[in-house]
Image 1 (cartoon, rainbow, N blue to C red):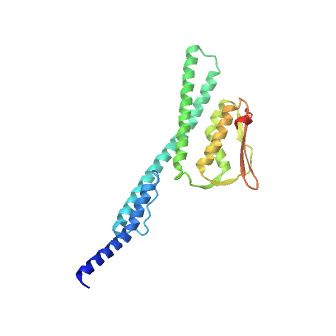
Image 2 (cartoon, one colour):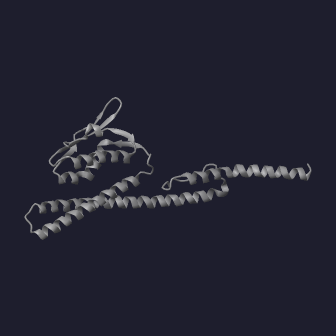
Image 3 (tube, one colour):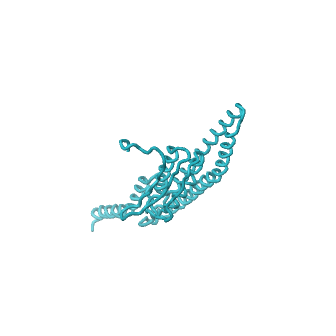
Length: 235
């Protein structure tokens, strides 16, 4: 075959080989460009050319270390918030008891400032706990088997001090447990919102009951209270 004919054929062959070789790299590059900023899952190593496979594995090692560091930070935030919640609740109870006594006006003013500071710190701890739970989910659409009783228990642990301030009787009346396949943060946020509203809008000394019921099609979660309820026109 003459050289002038052979050269274009070789160039075409090399172009096809390079295109097929680099096609997985192009797909990987597009995948990285489209992934979420908080997605630290390893990159796919399948069909990656040997020339760049070491580079991809080095990136995966770096992502693994970054993920471990982020999880350690999340555990620290959650543990710190949990450890501080109990003494903060104790301070709140002591301040409430102190407010029931006869105090001079300057002391009453200082006590009110103290109570406001405690309330701000408790809201901050609640935000830290919510942040820790949000970060604990590797993806917003990640689903798993969720125990409703355990969700009730976590919500009551976080909101019980608010109910205690109003002397409300709050608890779970269902003895059995049920499970749903869903996102843990979504279920927690749903139940917490309902219970938080029940505490805030129910009068003092009222009763708040959490329960669940399974029908042929659904699992029904109930939060019942003695509050005014929502007018039909506003539902």
